[in-house]
Length: 381
Image 1 (tube, rainbow, N blue to C red):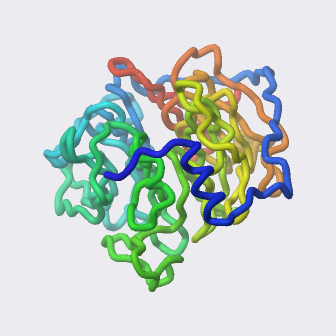
Image 2: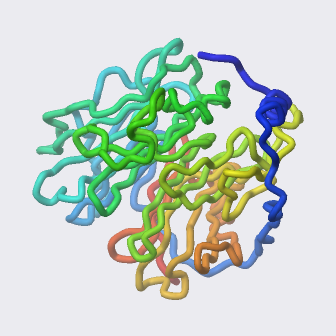
């Protein structure tokens, strides 16, 4: 799978190549988190979920929820649920792998088509994949795999796997770099550490940014990512947002543009888990800076840019789930910049895995627990 790189090796490689760090702006500025709490009404829609990972709202207001252990649940408004059949039989539910994201096709009301991302394979050779299927009477039918990341890896970490549709009907998905193979995030012959963009049938859009270049995976939309588990396209602003896990610190909220390089592992404000320095550079020429970073890490998962009437004052703000911080972060965004941050729901003391804006303007969150994860609906009190 390639050499496992150190921060020192990255620095030496850059210096030898003649590149120089970008000192034009300081990228270590922090927005100080406020401990202010807003009174919220928290309704439990469903409990006893097995490591829930993603939620999608169906046209009738009911929910599809993926469980990382390899199950897909249809949860109705009264809390009753049905387990959906027809999932792939090669789901790799180990470590951070398993059944991951679920999104509805833009024409779901007519086509009944859903897209699911998951880890597939074995301990020695696994990867992130996407299937497309129709949901008919509690069963996935006409199931087709439309993408699998290459190369395979032998780690059970950093699958990425968040998906979203863009206005032109293309599908983008985040891909982690497999934890042990951080150098792959800068390697365009690999899908690891990238965002990819596809047509719904899995074919490659002709206007992807690296089309026509040799020794480049044509699906690549952006590169230099570690493990992005938050992804949201904001239709109002026309911006594509992600957040991604750093190592020990260095979690990032980023604005994505096609063809851009987001730095990992050449730039980071984090350190390795053993305390070693990953890279001497927090910014670098030709690489995109973050909108906001979290050091120490909050382990972000789930992301929505809120648009709705229930929380009118929060329109345009980002909501980020914290696994390690065990809270919900509201990031006040103005013109693509973070100007404030607020901690919500810390009294739940729960790892938050997914965050979505529901069609009615409520905020949906999934709490991460192997035996008693919950689907919660948040409204003003």
